[in-house]
Length: 112
Picture 1 (spheres, helix red, strand yellow):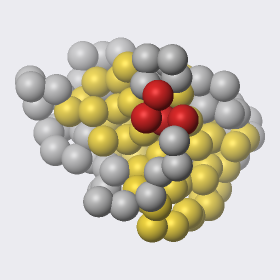
Picture 2: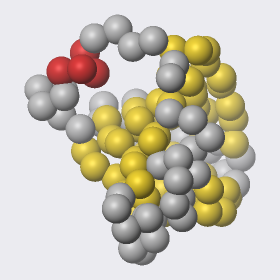
Picture 3: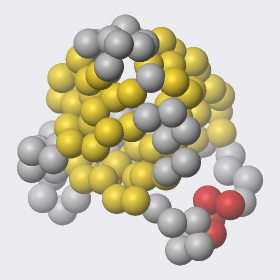
Picture 4: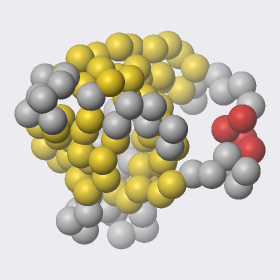
């Protein structure tokens, strides 16, 4: 399992960083949430540049996606990957479902 954080940098671009639980003990504590939504996206589904609508975790349960960033970098998210999405402003990121399997996600909306 890997945990990443997608956030907006001072340059207005979305960036991704790998989070280590030892360095981020706040992630090992109970977090207040509003709810959870499960989604299925078909292979090849593409979401062009977009921001997160709220602070949320997107956990890939099955399938794979590529997250694209303004600097041209791409991060692959597979089963078990948890992404804390906080890029609420700026250019945002893209999401493409890759491979031959649908991507199933659990999106957990975090409380303000």
